Length: 373
Image 1 (cartoon, rainbow, N blue to C red):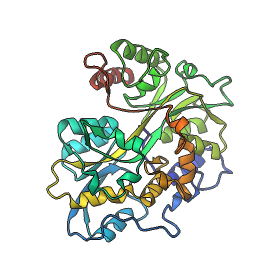
Image 2 (cartoon, one colour):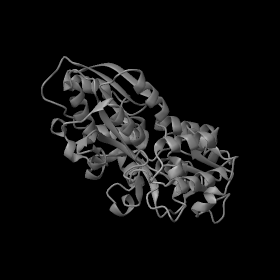
Image 3 (cartoon, rainbow, N blue to C red):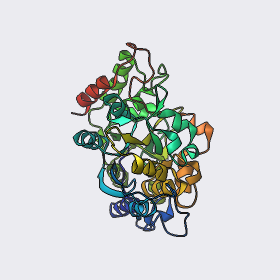
Image 4 (cartoon, one colour):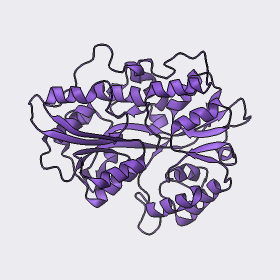
């Protein structure tokens, strides 16, 4: 999954790397992202009552540690954030979640499923989450396990394959991506799903038989010189310096590079992959009052607008698609059913596949480790 980082840092890095000296300082799809809270905004509501409780949070860097978000939450709820830990990657998130209990955790699909299976998170009473029904039903349904809700959707993204049209002629072909050495793919086992989409016999890229998994990995393994990125700044620099022909990225990075003057285009795909990050409720929380107030706070259009504009991901609350977040929402196709229907949103393999017929996530991770070692 794409690493989270601040828009201004991305823009400045792109400029330093020579992406476009004439590009404005805030070279991003959302002009307001340098200060996402500027201007009058409605105050998010969590609960009219006040509490003396505390809260321990684990999330991705940039998801809530900006523009006074945590201070605002404490002010309007009376809850005190006693611990606020941030990580940069999904692997770091998994390791940190295993070290100690947290009241709330923001998790992607693979980790979310693992947390449910291990009993580290508990079901959520959505009636206690202010604004829950404002979130997209599509994403709400993704958090249901055995009839119980385990997540409150927050931000989501989708992948595309970018190519440098000045270096690559007739680059609009997914197979060409995997035939190239000068390509950067995300360092994640779930990237196997993107390779699987090149197989016309694959219906759901997260429900692969052992044979289909083998074919996808073989496609990735045909060119051992390709790179695998864990920091999206690497792909920005790759295009800036002319080292990359192709890269797996999100629409946000395409907009960033376009605004910096790079001739990047996206490969036309019949289907693509995506993911949803949701807030989850820790299983060992003795008093859930402040945790539920945090869940309600993060559903608000104001909070999700700021987060979307800040990290370049789409909000789960479509009402957030205004002002600084509008260009981000447009890039991901928020509100456009035809585009969303083409996205295969990630689940932890084997997903809903019949038992014994599809490869499980441990097989994916084992094959990935062999691939990128």
